[in-house]
Image (cartoon, rainbow, N blue to C red):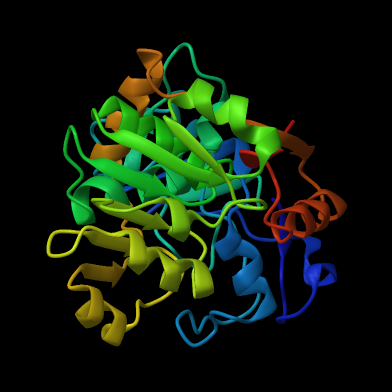
Length: 312
């Protein structure tokens, strides 16, 4: 099969198309013929070598951890899925990712594609949607009536987090550029703070939960707006400062996504009910050049919604 791989860490030019062996399913795995995948910051961070201590894999590495497509083969112990099923998934994090015509997925990580959802929309959801869900609810313990601040609301994770928080009955505040204000309000944001003209730390206070997707100074300043004693900060980009946690008397931690088929099926139901909208900002056909272009766009941090890679 065709795949785009890296054989060493480096710039986007390390992404190279080549033929690799077709995947063979284990007992509890299926082979998915990909119709679409999507780009996440972990992709280009790993390509550049920033995560090599965490993921010390042999080369070549096929990046990509969002899958949407059709099952073409099932393992001997798979009972709930069959050839021809349309599915999407966030596969386990291995060196055999989704920048390829076919990929392996463990059967418990699959979710059925809703009839009303396209493969491109479905491919934009798994990693970003599960990250948002787990940050807000599993770790952030967000409840109805609470106030949440979601940084970078126009991004792939932020745009889904806004919708999930609103569905849960929270008051939703987000940071973004002024040009995205109307778009984010349409997703359910109650307040959009233009980060270019306003310092959120000077205008907010008593926030129950901060979802940090930015890190560094944004993360440090976020401690200032949390409710003392009960405030929580959940980061997906860096370990919070222990001294700041103590100084502001709040809970703060960094999390790492856990693939979860049951949660993904819940997201699928919300999509089918029209309560969760996939935000596909850019579509690029699968090719060496296309993936290089997609990595470059993702690394700007200014892509609206998700960058989706489509297969013929």
